[in-house]
Image (cartoon, rainbow, N blue to C red; front, side, top):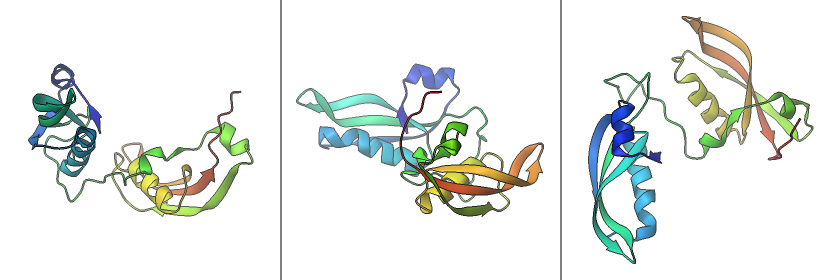
Amino acid sequence: MAKISETSARLLGCQLLKAHTIKDAHPNNVDRELKNVTFQSGGSHYSIVEVLETRKRRPSSVVAAIYQCSANAPQETNNADAVKLLPGAHQVKAITFAEIENTACKVLGSQFIKETTPENLEVNLANEAYMMSGNRYQVTKIVATEHGAPTSVYADIYRCKHQTAHY
């Protein structure tokens, strides 16, 4: 959930999902509430259209637009089919070769992702890894594909210490 300008939203062809008004909120909570509303609405970006009121030169009442910006997003999405990242799962990534050789990674187990759409595969992997307290995954076997993109896989889930190695 990120801020986006109205111009960028127009250039990227983002779809306007809804408008949201926040009234008399603490300035520290305006961005948090906008991110939560964007997530709950199925959007990916928000834009503050108008600032209605400020406190200490920071917005406390705003009107915001919630957008869905994705090049391959379907125009009409069914919320029942949409898979969303769990809060915190955005930090889960595919494991890199440097991390595989690093002894700071521990294998937590394997996970089987049943039939899903190719667009939702990485989201499902990240959610499953996060629920197992992992922060990395590696696809070990592709079981099924759709038009060359994997839809069902086996993956190993890892917990790696956060270290950066430059090779």
